[in-house]
Amino acid sequence: MPLPPPGPDSRVVVTGASSGIGAAIARALARRGHPTILVARTQEALADLATELTGLAGDATVHAADLGTDAGLDATRVLLDDPDVVGLVNAAGFGVTGRVAELAGDAEQRAALDGLVRLNVLALHDLTVAAVGALTRRGRPGAILNVSSITAFQPLPGAASYAAGKAFVQSFSEAVHTELAGTGITLTTVSPGLTRTGFADAAGTDAFDQVPDLLVGEADDVAEAGVAAMARGDRAVTPGLLNQLSALGGRLAPRTLLLPVLDAGMRAVED
Ligand SMILES: NC(=O)c1ccc[n+]([C@@H]2O[C@H](COP(=O)([O-])OP(=O)(O)OC[C@H]3O[C@@H](n4cnc5c(N)ncnc54)[C@H](OP(=O)(O)O)[C@@H]3O)[C@@H](O)[C@H]2O)c1
Image (tube, rainbow, N blue to C red; front, side):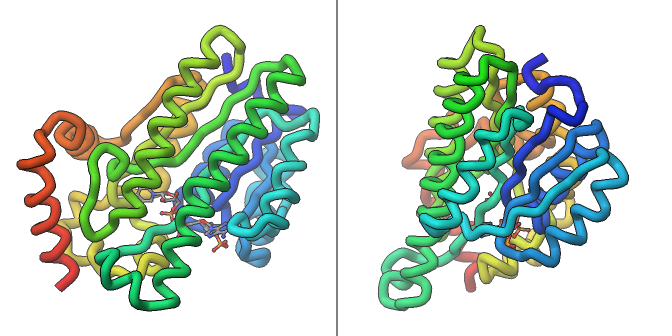
């Protein structure tokens, strides 16, 4: 079993734990009996969740850090050296919507794009490499779960940097999963579709309100699927049949046909 059985020495570091999918994953881990270290910027939300989880798993601690900064990343990387840490979940992330030509002319949006790459790509990569190194040195089984997205499977005009970042997450994570075969350490990727969280507000889009409810999933369902796959040491999971079909289409459809359709779809929710 790649995610060691629950117990005081089976602690999991969860980034993005102050809301949405990260918080739901922390709850799913605590329900299974895993102590957690909850990481995000918003101390109060983390403290509330820690109080809730402490009853479930015996222990949940708070680590407030901005993973978009070197200092926040350095302080979080150190957590992985704790011998009781057997797992890492990289859920911290955000989206930016809009056309690159427009975003480039707005200093705030331009900074948000850079911040997206720092958090969604560089911080995830840094913490994953650190966790693989720490678990390997310790010689104990362990498990990592990286939160990707169905946008990983094709380019997405109107959210170009976000989708490209998730393509990095998916490719990197699946490759490292394969490298780790037989080591007792596993890396699982969960690739949700649209999910009801604070994501749309943070991305400054009301696109979620413009699609049928059927297409918007719940964070708890994503978390259950992700943690179950992490516990099994699976390579990847895409929760929900419609999301699986979307991922398949994104992978297989010729780009010359797919990109104009996606472009038109994104323009429809932008206007
Ligand atoms: N919702 C969706 O439709 C959807 C679909 C596919 C994939 N995803 C992915 O799911 C993951 C979680 O997103 P969500 O939907 O749960 O959105 P969310 O509710 O907005 O949660 C994002 C989390 O990331 C944390 N975060 C943001 N910036 C951070 C920073 N600089 N340093 C540390 N933590 C930071 C936030 O905490 P603080 O603000 O407190 O720092 C929060 O805990 C992301 O990787 C996202 O790309 C979401």
